[in-house]
Image (cartoon, rainbow, N blue to C red; front, side):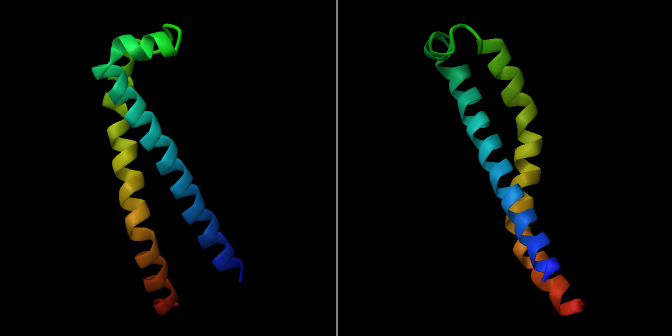
Length: 83
């Protein structure tokens, strides 16, 4: 039972982190292409150069979380069979 709870917590954590990273990735991409609009909406906080830096760094966590999200169910099923 405890093992199932841990699996649920891990899956939810990965899901929420993937959502946050995806939203940040989209906002930073929008900040690159529509920088004047985004700078005005963020009161100058997210400039084009900062959006580019954020967008450039986020692809690695996005990829890791996406692959984790896709493979976790299969991994937990395989783990349950082996155990």
